[in-house]
Image 1 (spheres, rainbow, N blue to C red):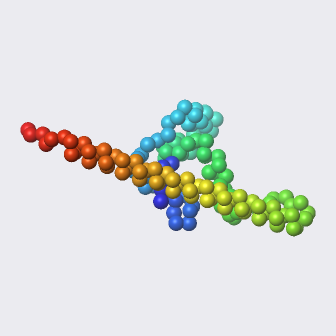
Image 2 (cartoon, rainbow, N blue to C red):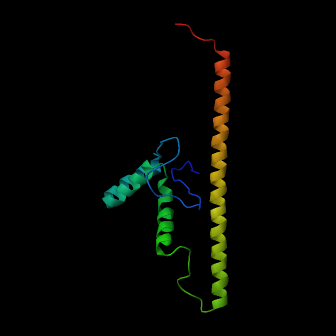
Image 3 (tube, one colour):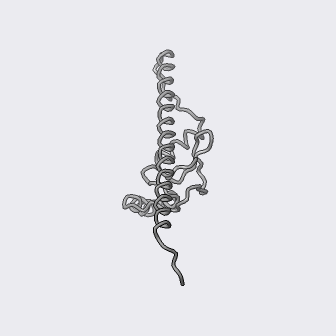
Length: 145
């Protein structure tokens, strides 16, 4: 399944980070915020500007870049969130870790439902467009040259 933001989601629910997209549109996201973020990143550190430019060209919003980088960094460091500083109480630490895991599951469920809803809306739009096209073809007489 793919989302309209340009990231594709595989069977395990993880986003792919490559440039390949399975969406039908190749729209980029050139909002004023994205342009400003790209220009400022080029001014202060040009490699960061290239990253922001790639991010925008792949159809994603620059506001999502820091969160995506943080998620990727956590994934590379070992997956799930772990408490860096303990409270000294192992039972409370276990409880807190359980709550963080539960929150992550809820976030994943929300993302999955959002992607399903986007797919549903895209399908509904496609069906409406098909009906409109069929009505047009039925009402327009064949043109003779």
